[in-house]
Length: 437
Ligand SMILES: [Ca+2]
Ligand SMILES: [Ca+2]
Ligand SMILES: [Ca+2]
Image 1: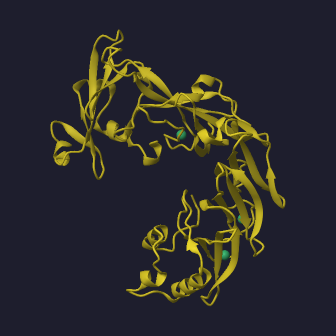
Image 2: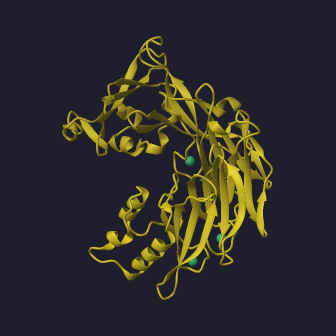
Image 3: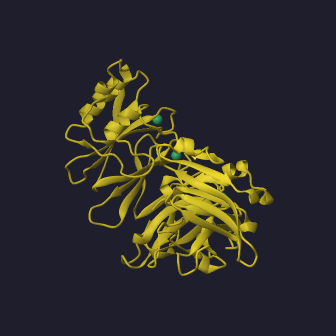
């Protein structure tokens, strides 16, 4: 992401603003010494903040109470302070500009109703110089929040749109470098299916697309992510929970300039059950910028079928704009221990994994599913002696974290399948924290 946005150069400052501590920039920059511009910023903020409290955005990438972005496109970043007061429009965004002589002056105060800033983004929406400010606010007692987009290209804050939303994503769906806004909104009632709508800048204002009905109510939406279809078309993937705790993913794209839902050729694949109580979401697992959608593939476990839960590997597929699926890769995901292993397609029909504590033995069944050939074991080591254990008894290191070391050991027969240490190291991955539900 090329977003030119960052904290006031100091992570400590961010943490303090976030935690709501009443520390001043003065205190943070002395000792050893503070620059004159920070001192000017601090005094400008102090004056403007009289009677206000900092109100940092609650979610998203930009959660600092003081942020920087070049809103008017003059090459100099403005300071934005997110604050809350006591008036009937308590939510306030204070915009400070830096003058040529180092002076900091308040330029704008944007006030609105609401109880909290939920999300703040900076994107080029209008194609003109400067980043547009996108602000989602929580509005009391309502499922839907309110999102506004402000442009500063004229030198003053100009509101381009205001709409209700329950989830939102900015993405370039049209291939124009400008970003569009995709909003998920509540249907007619809380129980009716959510709708998605796209806003984009056209000539002088934001144009709204026709609504697309999603498969589930807005309250069921768990994740909205951007990615690409297999054909390269940008798309939005909206994953919702179903009543039987599966995930259903709706895929939206602009086709012939219309926002449409891509209909999977095999609709049963649109649902994926939880795996060991974890939701499995669409993701770009192989990092080729095309989004992959998971489906669970049952494998024959080693114990008698009535003895254990069914065992699954995940098949990851992509779709194109016609809904045609392409199998991309396979994996064994171990959410509870935080790792996954890519698997070869030709093993999938015969692979089996047996668990002893945090050790996972991967084996292949023979073609009659009578005997197994052990291939390798993956270990998640957490004891105090884990560093030694990771390299003892033929084990080798896969990945080392702060609290856990992942190691593996090869069995003799793995050579028949061209599996060596390098292969396992290459195909072993940690599960990002955000994947966990
Ligand atoms: Ca500027
Ligand atoms: Ca712009
Ligand atoms: Ca991919």
